[in-house]
Amino acid sequence: MSDGLLVDIHKDLTWLYDAPPLLADTTMMANFNPADHRSHNVLSQEWRTYPCAPAYRLGKQFEDVVAALIRNSPSTKLLARNLTILDKKRTLGELDYLMQQAGGQILHLEVAIKFYLHHPQIHGLSSFIGPGGRDRLDIKQHRLQTHQLPLTKKAEVHQALLDLDLPFPTHRAALLTGYLFYPYRTYHTAYWPKITELHSDHYKGWWLRHSEIEQLGTRPNSDTYFVILPRHHWIAGLEHQKNPTPLTATELKNQVTGTYSPNMIVEAKEDKGRWQTISRGIIVKDSWPD
Image (cartoon, one colour):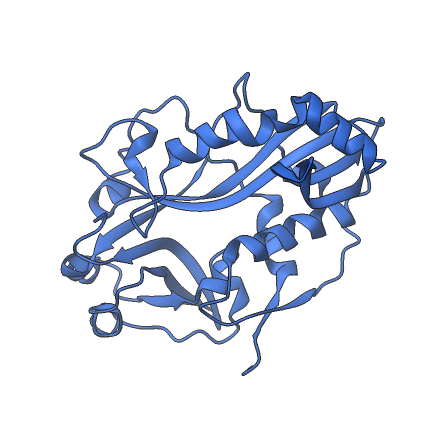
């Protein structure tokens, strides 16, 4: 569509129900489990229109998916979303979601979907860097634990919620999910760094720089191909595409080499007329993370 991107976020919601968190539970940050709120009475399709690049924001699409999860959950009620908290005209922060759960508990929920690449020469959570080279997993964890989630513990926020006739949260949780991408050879040897803060079942993929794309052509399975995902398909991936455009490793290299923006890739295989995802990857410029 010339006036926007039409996306069926029901496919993203189906993906989200089973998506594990990126980080393990801690005393400072509890994980919200989407599977606990699964509903079988949702619409089979749920379309949303988003602006094209550069105005498009993946984070806004993911927030709509989480809102659909809460709205369709039989045990929750959405009380507020993207609620800006003011104190005497001073902005204290924004609450992603305020919701009522079964039993009457009031939950303050902060959400994000992230895609980080593991840098093998760096240790700990700081080794997971965004495809653009700026964002890092340790920075996101710190912000969630020290600013976003504790926000509703402040007396000023309590008063602001009272002024809005909204209840004060009794619980706080984070929904931080997505993929962690490991160097291509590391991914295929299943050798993962031992980082206790990571959730053991987080979704994993591979990454390559432009000059390393030839490694894709060395795979023994000649019947696998590659599909480039537009950014509005990054959540549910290939499920958004009925008729994807499969590329050989050489064709993929010709399309992405020289592009500045990172490209998310699905390694796919056709089975009885349907394309199945084998793995996901990200291809970045040679100078990444600079």
